[in-house]
Length: 164
Image (cartoon, rainbow, N blue to C red; front, side, top):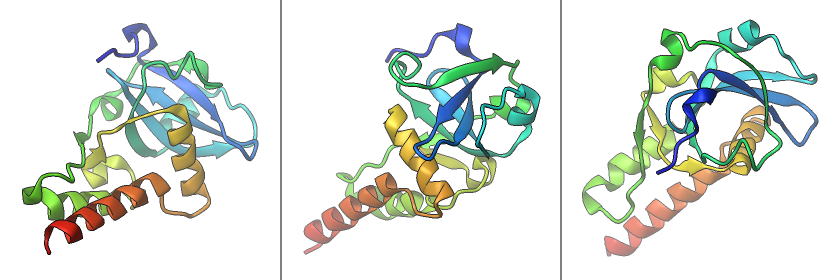
């Protein structure tokens, strides 16, 4: 699996949302990005301020996102210990009967947006720019993230079908 080039690690990325506001993320190791609970109506380039805010979630992001989206690198800062601690990523396996309940529980937990350190696990799907924007916009609109809701429905339907 291709990774984002190591030269980008520590870069802070500005992410335009559809309501003309901006969110921010730091590029971590591999395909990981830390998304901050920080939204502005201007392009903030104060890297220290951005990276000191709470981390909303960490997600794996497709390696081409920097070339194929309107995300913009606004600066770079060496990663501190908070940014080097990575969550455990899991990938929902709706085909494995032994982990249905575990998967469903973890999917539902991902709807609780708090700092990732307190939640322990993150969905290990690799996201596109549009998926991340949807997740951020859902969060700031006070909605549950629709992508995870769809996975929950899939798990529940598969479980109901196979428990007949």
